[in-house]
Length: 445
Image (cartoon, rainbow, N blue to C red; front, side, top):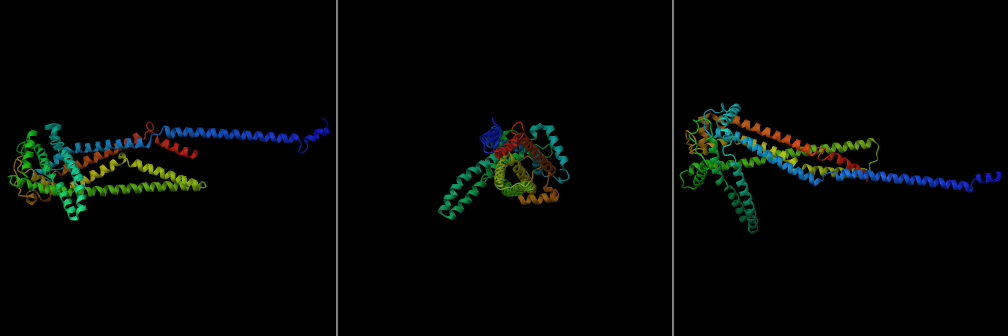
């Protein structure tokens, strides 16, 4: 090739330069296509990996809720059974001291005396003697709840139909429903009275009780029928039975209303404090995230809306999780135990008077009492047994009862925390890793 021809090929616009530029562009485009395909494969692999963690290895929300509800029900029932079983010997000893008239019993009935009484009863009668009439209270509560439930179902329909006819007929029907609701006290009072006799006759001191009145279940049934017949006005024991029955019904009505009021007040206060804490935590977390985004100089537009929706979704899921029985049983039981203790402390003097009237003329006391009524019992207790302190016999055992309730609540709390930790353990359900994987998957998508 001549020199002029070679220089012509190197000149601007020659065919060799045009061919070279086209080949370079094709190679660059091929490299870009290869890189794009590789990035798509990597992104798809990341999404598949995160989806596998967040979906296939994550327990469903429904299964988690069911498991927490079942666990919460088991813990709640266990706590109630433990509270009833462990507190029963203490309650039985307290009722025994309240029912027996004793001069200046306030100085004697210390918590140490209560412990000594329980130990003495156990040594001379075993575990069975600590539980006289165990379960009779549960039978009474079951009968009462069943009766009230059936009565409400029947009377609610009648009240609605009566209100459609006239307002006066509806008011009379509602009044009849309340009267029928009180009728359950008629079969329950003899049950509780004979249960109290079982507790009093288990006293360890021979000079306090005359003899054991109830030897076997046949005696219990016989005395129960005798008390039922005593409700008829012509019966010999009618007046004596009514002296304890009427104050007992009035006390039950007052304590029931008081117990519900205290429980609602405590539970509402707890719920308000919990909501304030949750709101403060959520606000602090949101503010911290906003501050972090602002300090890093990120432009938060559509991302802010996505973060807000994600936060609302996670907040709703958290509220749904926190509404399971596992997370609600302890506040309910704690408020129930505390309200019961407060109500019992306020009604303690009246209970003492009623218990004395209930065991009168039963033959269980060595020296029978002859109270003419509720107010006569109050007057004679004040003047004959040491003033206002005489209305608090067995107060030391009451302190033991409060202490036992506190221990049961503490044990229930630690059982709740241990169960919560077990359900969230990495070996069972690594929910924290799953949540992180889901957030990463949302970002990748």
